[in-house]
Length: 126
Image (cartoon, one colour):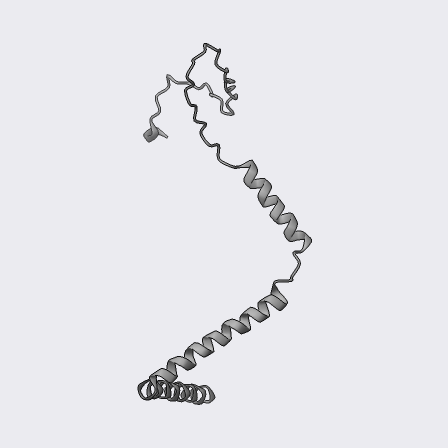
């Protein structure tokens, strides 16, 4: 019962506010928009004052500095290789090209198990 009374009260307040806004918009449109823009402007000014006085002067914690440094190092390490573009020079010289290192093949971690290959695998006989 208590919850039902509160919801009726809230609906009543919201309804009265809607009626007031509509009547203000119809009867005094210019004043309505002036008040709305003044409220928005005051909100922006208040937010700016709070931001510049309190939030901007926060010093970064030592952990945050370390985290940002780690992010920079990670980005530098895993930066994708950009393709190198070569331009032809006017005079071509016959110079030996730089030899690329051949990628060494790793030994496979898998191995072949020799089994009885001549025996027929008939699953129905199991």
